[in-house]
Length: 217
Image 1 (cartoon, rainbow, N blue to C red):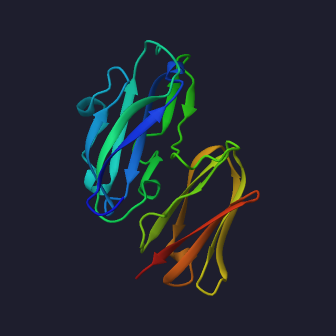
Image 2 (image 1 turned 45 degrees about the vertical axis):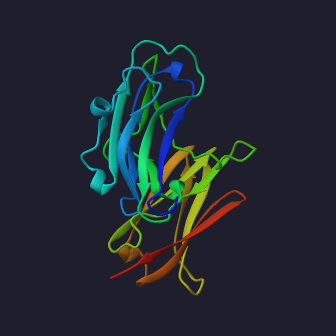
């Protein structure tokens, strides 16, 4: 998106006939994006005033909850709702919008009462193999005390996150097994040697992605 460009971002899902409800937190970068309206989609009993909390828009936070006890008619892909947004600066939507459990736990409830996880993917991030591997921009950026580095894997597996200084020296590394879906790694100031520009790299199997971030005083 270019500066002052407006767009309606549809949030879609399929197989909603298998689910009776969901809840989650949507985070966005308020320095890059202004969200000023929620447009309900095709879900029954979903209303902007009743199903969304918009009191923290200045902080880049939206929470939503929906439930419908009657099974949906079919499992086709449908638009749940759309975000009407304006870009404050040039921005890629996938770098400015995140799904998390920061305020409201990200989960869905099936018709049988089982709780499942929710992930957010963007069109164009799914390879033909059906594998999702996405490293998102850290937030906030620049940062002073701590920052969050989000990423998404599908399927799950072993992954590592490394941070390098301008000279290419590795100054931070964490690794582990991550389930399929969206994850966040928190990095604190004391874990890096000094302020400045850093590059962070996510590796999983034969896939690798790198972004940059700035630590300031």
